[in-house]
Image 1 (tube, rainbow over the protein chains, first blue to last red):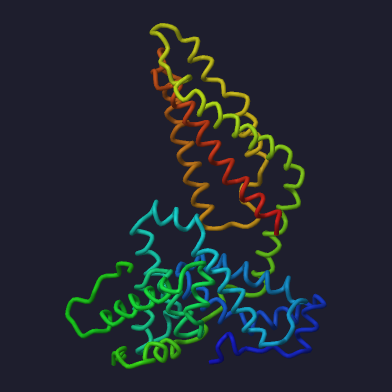
Image 2 (spheres, rainbow over the protein chains, first blue to last red; image 1 turned 135 degrees about the vertical axis):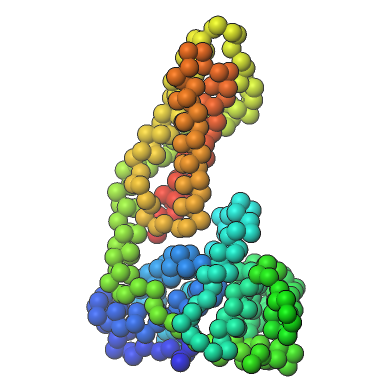
Length: 193
Length: 175
């Protein structure tokens, strides 16, 4: 399946969508919404939050469509909007306050909610579970670095943190994931790193 | 079969093999409905800006007075003298302004963010608890000495709620 960043939309559809044609906008939605939502869920975890951010992201896409310069596929542009919305949430004081107030219960709920494609079967379901066992920040860093191809410098800039923050998050996530996949009787519990 | 993450690049490969997309969260028609809902209330709030500013101003006055006279109104009244309690039972004017502004807001903001929503419901729950305690205290012939403190706590909670809802209103209108 084509990744979000590689998803392009025909020029004619784009022009019609810019002019406000609802059928063209629906076609763009059909092409981009599934991958956008999957990306957002992998970044933030909880479904309700992901829906909030997804709605923001898609609304912003249509609002800013006239500014799209076609230097990259539309999916790559949308990916940038989605990631920046996710990071705004991860950096927000509201989220930090919620983590302080709600503690471990929230994390457990997030872990449960993180199976982005629960219907999918095979080895990937284990990888999904392993990924879900990471905290939202570590998961976002892993996803941005390993899958979306961001450098440590870019991740640090997006999070407003240092390069070593990105490197240490990634290193700790690797340790955590290795432990998850290590053959052992007592698999580590779903605590956050 | 478990992936061998010790090999360089193996984690990236394993993660990239995950399905890139599942189902969209909802169809386009639902997206449009939610988009309309998010943009509608901000227009209806335009007239409430002055009231919002007044509420925030009142909040600033409360904060300043609490800072300058932290223990002034928590003093216990002398036994048998219920006049201060009666005075405390009627909400202060700034609290009335804040409550009037809160009542003028739609039940849900234009954009419902889960974090903010939880903060709002948490504060509303606590205000309801204080209201319960206040009404229980009000039914007694001799209101307890905590009555004034409860009133103050309620004003403080309302102030916090005003701050959160005001921030929500500004976020809505900046959209």
